[in-house]
Image 1: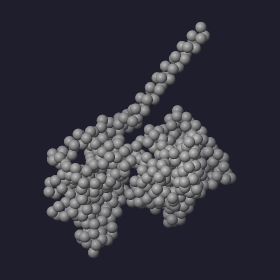
Image 2: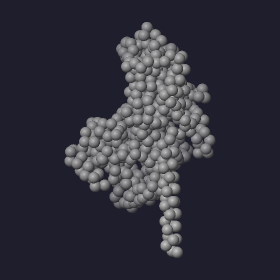
Image 3: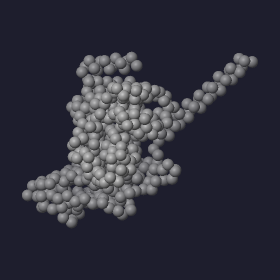
Length: 108
Length: 277
Length: 161
């Protein structure tokens, strides 16, 4: 199952030099591979294993996730405002499928 | 039992609102200092306590921030579906109801007596009635993401409004049936709902702090489920835990129980979608 | 004769009750036991060593973990790691590893930071199988590896749910 319904919270505006928090949330079951299904067979592992945040095309933050991260991964981190531009957030799962979301910031 | 009653009276006299054997004089519990959090006052009405009062501070934080509350990914789905045409009649929810704000106050009266079926209808039943009767669309499964998203989105419009279900007139026999369910011992553990949720809220059951089992936060994102879930799913989970055969979601049994549980919650603010353990 | 029979019945009933009691205890024990083999602090140490290229971290107050002292449910435990760092081009946190000492697998996640972060603080939510230490290991741009830890108590539901 690919990650879906990504949500991100980025301030619309900031002053140069401001440090602000970015929050992200995506819907994904984060199946650990340790559970058994109703038929007694193990449910294969299926997780979002990588999250990246790029600003104007340059990667500024990455997270590698293990199966012990909760379903519907919540990830929050900080950024410092330098210039106006676009943040692109990408979640990639074990099958290599990814979902992205973009948010713009106006820096004065 | 008598010492618990005495403890309760003592705490009540001291002005502490928690009816709790497990709550110390200073308001602290095994879950930390949760009874001195000023936020709980909005979740206590008279002698009624929302499950919020028995949640840890971290869980309360998660509920109160609409971004951090993971239920809001389902709310986003509900919002999308609101405007989406579906079914043979080419209608969306918005085609009849307009802006979602028009539904403010609507959800707090459910379950409600429905003449067409001569029984009680939960909000889920009404959503599916809309879909099949007025949209010509297929009904959604009770616990589907779509149904959870739509009920969470609709209930969000009434967030903060007091629960206000009616048990008068034609609803009365269904209320009585729900009440009988609540007080009926069942399962291998031979427990009735009231034995935990009426007699022991605030006490520990092993490592768990018992609540009143109120329904004002559903659908709720449960940390255990790591998912949004319906009140009927919660009923089924409780029934399974006491080793009783659960009923089907949407069954008359659980819908009548929902009426009783929501009547107990009358006056408490609608918190859906809440976050609970 | 009838007296003897009643004795036999009594003994049998006790035997039966004893067996049932034993069964209940076994079942309760099974419910409390972790479902999969669990990691140890040593496994967690090995995991960290692999990630950091063998450099053992030293405990340092600059690494702080914010965790609830009691997690209501181990499936969703919020965690925030803060590393006291200027986050300049010359001095910043490159990575933060978060490790669980008592999970089936010790790894939780790795954050890769850049000076663009401005502040070395990250948050997520994790699954913890039982009461244990959570360890955060920070790699700094000068090659230093520092760590901090905090215990979190994980509860299970009243009916075993």
